[in-house]
Image (cartoon, rainbow, N blue to C red; front, side, top):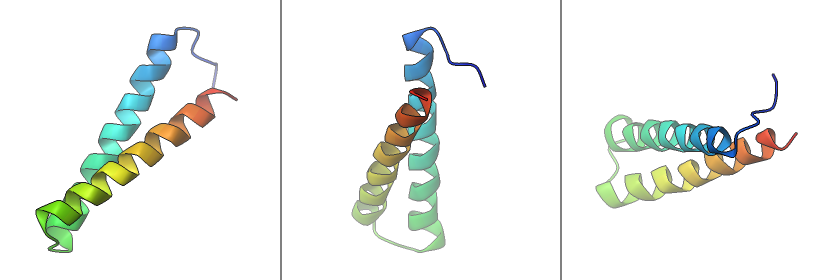
Amino acid sequence: MPQPSDPGETHMRMLQHAVAAGAFFFVLQRFAMKESLQVSLLWAVFFAVAAAFLSWQQSRR
C-alpha cells in the first residue's frame, strides 16, 4: 500500500482506527460483558489510544 503523502490523510486514518476500536470495545464491554459505564469507557479509551498508536506506527513504514 502506498504511503499517504498528505499528513492530514495519515491523521484521518489514525482517527478512524481509534474511533472504530473504541466503539467496538465499548459495545463489547457494555453490552456483551455487562460491565459498568465507567469500566466500558476506560477500556474503550485504552484501545482507542492503542489503535491510534498502531496506525501511526504502520504509517511510518
